[in-house]
Length: 422
Image (cartoon, rainbow, N blue to C red; front, top):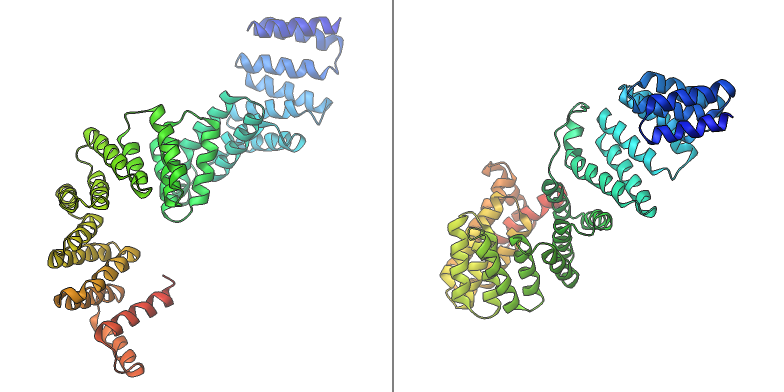
């Protein structure tokens, strides 16, 4: 008889007749006071009808009868979360996970709790775990929900370290999430950025932005053919994205398809005619085909848009050197080096200096200009106090007599970088 009441209760709950369902479960419990599932289902009916405290009470009764009921722990955690009892909710959901390590919904719920407590990184880890389990279970909808939570939370990671926990932290956009992944790759964490993007695309294989972002990361890793495949897929999903055309053009140029690169970059400029990066990229493609004047024109256009574009100056210097206009080449290299120095981009700064050294034999003035650039860099490294720089140079002159002025400057710079771990 109790089974009959119980089944009628399930049927009424399914029809959202929660009051009727509760009455049926009452009858089942009166007949069998140790009916664990009846307490659990009555708790669900109370919860769905908004009577949260009675739901918690029923889940607690179910756990007294069965202390290892994973579902009861999960449901009570959900109810406690609704009551803003975050410690109680966390305790219950962790018990649910302890009894079932593959309980995707429990990881998702723990992510929600940790987010409300302000522990962003922990929340992200739980949503990732839940999404992975949902994927294994072929539950793509819940997987996608977890993915959206991660996209919202990822950009808050650094901010969360500096601020006190807050349940009402601002949510950033998907675009900003991908921007953060690219910044991670720019800092050298390409494998981690690639792993995150692989995971995103596994969860949502129709995400055009993710394909573009992964293509950029693969370019940074030197995998241009794989990057090209990603850009192609991104354009199949969204053929009106200028950023994808720009990046595919750059990848094509590296692979030797300069005409294809120029076609892509032309397309990008039709969509975004004020994008300096596209002009620099097209200038590089023109230069690779021997069209040096076309390249110089594009670099000049880029500098009209962004007068502080060091890469445009540097590449324009290369183009001028190709047509043996050495004075113009030196002037552009010098300007590029100054900007890289101001930005403290020492890798590109050193690359420009190497280019200057190669053309010194063509221009006697370039040696003096190279000396001035080294002096400028050393001055920045010692905080603008030239007396400190002079003392360091004198020490090198005493230890290494007979070297050139440029050699002493470079030696001091190298030693300072070594000591500072640069």
